[in-house]
Image (cartoon, rainbow, N blue to C red; front, side, top):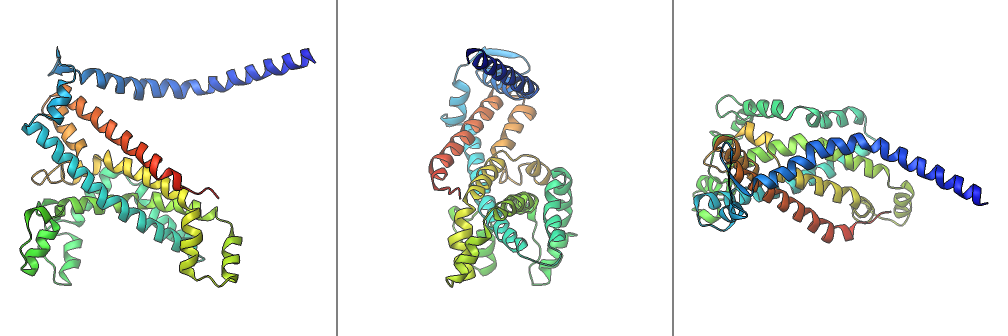
Amino acid sequence: MNERAASRRRRGLIENAQAYLFLVPAIVFLGLFKILPALYAVYISLFRWDVVQGAFRGLDNYFDILWQNTTRSQAFWQSLSTTVTYALITVPVEMALALVVAYVLFQKLRGRGIYRTIYYLPYVTSTVAAATVFLWVFHPQYGIANQLLGLVGISGLKWFQEPDGVFQMLGNALGVAVPEWAAGPSLALVGVAIFTIWHFLGFQILIFLGGLGNIPVEYYEAARLDGASQLQLFRRITLPLLSPQIFFVFTIASIGVLRAFNEIFVLTNGGPLDTTRTVTQLLFKTFFQQGQIGLGSAMGVLLTIIILAFTLIQFRILGRRVEYG
């Protein structure tokens, strides 16, 4: 018995060693290209950097960004406000549309495989290429979007070149004076949000379709026998049992929006008048264009902390409400 137990123990150790051996390439990759750069960014943020490393500043770079009443701190807080506004526009609309479309495509429709492919195609398209096409679609003079809106009497929209708030523009069209604080997000930011929703909708639809496929059909059949309507089926069965996918999509979408860069860089490059300059855009401008490497690294660290804190709050508050079966 002792020899047999020792043999099992040796076999277990060998299997564990083999498992860790298979993990080595992934660990090395993450260490070299993820963990070490992140740690080095923290190191850089503690110094004054121009082209070469300067004097040690400790947390002064962070204080300059967060608490000093300077143009730099004002730019950071404005960019953070723009980032939050962008997330509030994009994530709820994106998730609601994805859930509705996925629910429809889950039904027995003719050609639903083709529809699923069509909705998923934008997600596998290069963000830069798709954003470049959007610049043409929403061109103020030649774009298809303005031509279609012209059919219903709406014309002259500048889209990605428009810094005015959408509520302010609507008030001007109706002859109503809208105060500055209620001007709303700029039309350019709304345009970027439209692109983001269109581009990432397919991924969320795919996740929701997978979740819908895991819900036992017997639940729906029993509820129908009890006289439940289609709306009741959706509210009482689909939504609760789809909560793991909803929570996952909400978390991933929030993180993606907070760190979005490519689409904004191509569509507006932070303009017009900084109305679409998110934290990532300000970070890029500070680090690469202005050469303030220490401050740019500090902004990157702060953004990482914000995303991490937001994610932990999501898990703390919303994670408890997830129902698994």
